[in-house]
Each structure stands twice: as C-alpha cells, then as structure tokens.
Image 1 (cartoon, rainbow, N blue to C red):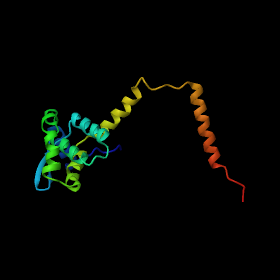
Image 2 (image 1 turned 90 degrees about the vertical axis):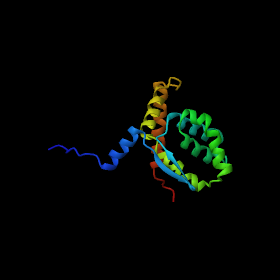
Image 3 (image 1 turned 90 degrees about the horizontal axis):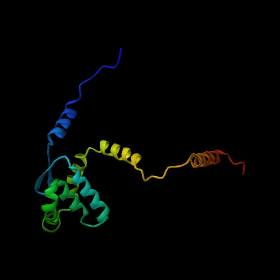
Length: 157
C-alpha cells in the first residue's frame, strides 16, 4: 500500500498557530523582559540596511536588537532611535545580553520562503546578460578541460 498520512506533531502545530496569530515570545535582556513577534518585512529591511551601512560598528548589535524589539513601521521611526541608545548608553547591555534577542529574531523569520523568492526573482531579472550558444559551449569546454586536467596522473617520479 501507499504511504500512510500522519498528523503533525504538537510542536509543529503550536509553531503554525504562533505564525498565524503573530504570537510573541518573551526574551530577557539583563533584568528586563521584552516580547518578540514574527518580524515584519520593514524590520528585515532595516536589519539588512544596518548590516550594509554600519558594518562592524560597535553599536550594530544594539541597533539590531532594538529593531527586533520594536518591529513596526511607526516604532522604527519613533521609538527605535531612542531604544538603541537606551540599550547602549543607559542600560549598558553586553553583547551576550543582546544575543538572546538577536537569536529569537532570527527564529522569527520565515527564511525558507524568503530564500526561495530571492532565487526566483534573481532568475527574472532582465538586467542579467544572457550568453550566446557559442559562449556557453566555450565555458562548458573549459570546465571539461579543467576536470580532465586535474584527473590525469603524473608519471614524474
């Protein structure tokens, strides 16, 4: 007979319910507790912009943690600039304190769908230069030559 269909595990059902309801998880930073919900696209964009703009700045962890905690358009405009400075200058959290928030934010992104969309959109770009058949055959020939060159055994002692 064919494969038998099984029901999903309870943990998988809870996670799906959390996604649908935009459930939040509690994260502790030092003595304070914050709720982290599933990240909005604007928050993902803010984190990407921070990574590109700030690079290895000493405040980037504080900025990313604040963006994850705020996680809304208005919050990023109004609260975020104050919150990351609050984390950095007033509370003086360590990198270790912030790692729990950043790890929870990472869990709150549905990356598999995001990566699939990026791959599909990359294939749809009209700015990518197409190759002619002649160029494609030349590249393939180079690959074959390189493979056969690596596999030949040397007769030198």
